[in-house]
Image (tube, rainbow, N blue to C red):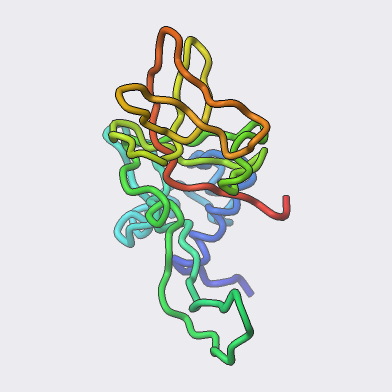
Length: 195
C-alpha cells in the first residue's frame, strides 16, 4: 500500500535532500524524491509548502526554504547546577536562524582559527556570527582589520586610542600603527560537539 503524503512528510523528504546535497532539488529530482509520476503533482506540493510558509519562491522562480523549515522543538529548560525535578514539556518551535540572527541582511559567519579568544569561550573550529554596521562598545568581541591583517579580539578604548585585546594572556595588546577597520561585532558562537 502506498504511503499517503502530508505536508510534513514532503517537507522531511526535501529537507533530507537539502542536508545531503546543500541545495534544493530540481523539479525532475522531486518526482523521484516524492515518488510521484508528474511535475504537476510536484507543483501541487510546492504550492502547498509555499502556502504553509515552509518554502519561498524568489522573483526568478527559485525555491528556498523559509527559516521555519529547519526549526526544532524547544522542550523547556535544564538545570546546569544541581538536578531539579523539572518535567519535559514542549514549549515552542525555535528556528536557530531567528534565535541567533537579528539582522540577516547585515550578518555573516566566520570559522575561528587559533586560540586567542579561549578565555571568552571561543575555540578553534567554532563558528561566530558577526553583525556589520553596528558601533562596538567597550568589551565587545569584534572582527577588525589591523594594518592589513584580520583578527578577532576584544574592542577596548584607551582615551582616544582603540586597542584590541585577546582573551588569552599569551597574546599582547594590538595597537594599530597605521590602520584599523572594523568588520563587525560578534553576536553569537556556534559549536558542534559531535560531527
